[in-house]
Image 1 (cartoon, helix red, strand yellow):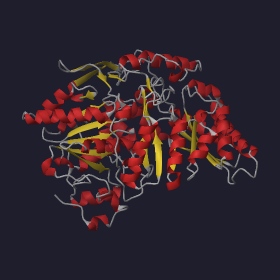
Image 2: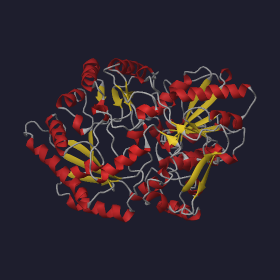
Image 3: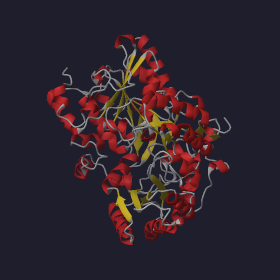
Image 4: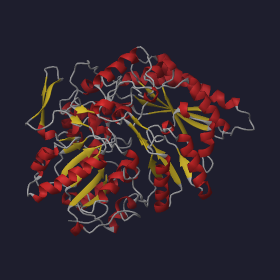
Length: 617
């Protein structure tokens, strides 16, 4: 097999993407391990190396003496071209060995529009993209991550899906692999036995029948002993779970080039559009002492000078004031910056903001999500206009002059008045800036409004609702643009066609797998990157595969329809999601779970606490 050479690396952009050997990466003796695992991230190095899940699983898998986990990223098109020309198969960074020499290829599913990169990576490795065409001797392809909660569009790409959190289940799967291997059995027997592990879905062991109208008639196991429902895996002792004491320090600058420390998992807010808020329940926190301990170790082992506190909504941590103040005091002398990437408007305070900007100011982004209170109540955002104005005043008084506000358009039950309300909200933020005395506020006011297109996702109260059509999106963008009057306000929006295809794949069934294969064969890859995304390719692929994209993206579902992901149990009852959608129609708010149980079912179904708070740990 041909190997990568300096001659090739000299011809590509950012050659350090392909060299490996970074500080804190693992190097093991391949002769002394039993299992080789390639952790594959279906995007470019800078994106994959910023992903916390990859850092955690790379560390936990390599802590096993019998396993060698290596990293693989999607080569940028310039590198792919040279690799294909020179006959160089896709390889792992640590050993430079091609992927067909590994036992497992693990792909993380963070975004539906990265799926064609998965197919491209398999093809670059010299493997069949379809699982049904791969041999007994080929690596086992495993997929996990948030998008795995609807695994069906990749049912004939992956051999196995892990539903839920991976730290514990991965160890169980590797132990089982060693056991089956010791018995002299192969992949087929391993997959059959793996189906008995909680949180593991083996698509080849199931089948689907459809109604004449294209909806699902039934979904069923092909043989006895295979579970009808797949229950997600969660880590219950989150405060005590092993966390990396070192991260790889890349040669290249990456998207999030800093220490990242996880503070808690889950969310109690119940936003009706938010998949993460449902699938990651229940909330489990780390205590302040544990977070600081993790941070100390990572700062010492990496040399970074900034730490980001990671969670779905950091200000909801039950000890957030003490945590931030303690960290600010501890790290100020060493000029270590602290960033809080997921600020909620209603949990923002002047004291907190002054603490995090002592060392260096980071950007401020707030997510009102909708422009009017009616719309915020519909989506159960749980924040008010006054919350935003208080936060803006705090920011402007503390020396910020740029604020980014994030919204969605195309939400269920939305009107043009709600869209115009986005511009109105931006204008009111501008007004708050001018209320701050000149001698206090900083010059150069910028209020950046950003909108994305709502995509209905599985396991949300809006999973039954249609995505609005492209012409409606364009009309809403025109309404918003014309409503913006202030020169201090700038507006950016995401491309419509990408969101349409995201909806097709996110809500797709097994038939969408044919679409993905066809799109890949026609050249689709890096679909999340505007410079490489081709809507024409996808339109041709839809036509040639005989798939009606509107059936998946724009069709309203009835509550009694069998959805492609209904065989997965996330712990939240379907009846609860239906009730939340009905509340949305009336703009009725459901309070935060921390204020009292809202009966989603996660405590009963997953046999645990709804909320494990750090203060009580």
